[in-house]
Length: 80
Image 1 (cartoon, one colour):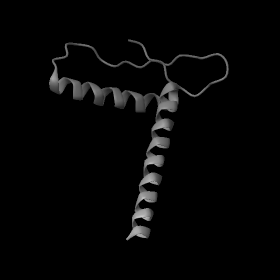
Image 2 (cartoon, helix red, strand yellow):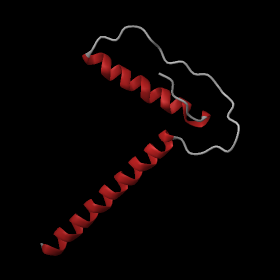
Image 3 (cartoon, one colour):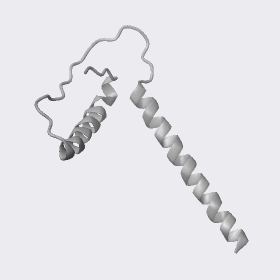
Image 4 (cartoon, one colour):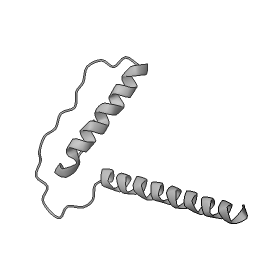
């Protein structure tokens, strides 16, 4: 499998992939394979990668849950 990410995110992606492989190895035997990185040149304008979009979406979802939790607490205080 080949995954292309921008250079600034490469280290975080490799860490997440290694963590996922470690979790997978706890339940299933994995034979061989390793994560390799290689720099490539990309002509043109850089856009946000899928990983960046995923991280931003996760942060937005977490913020929404925190905000909703705060509103529930405020509502309960008003009722009590």
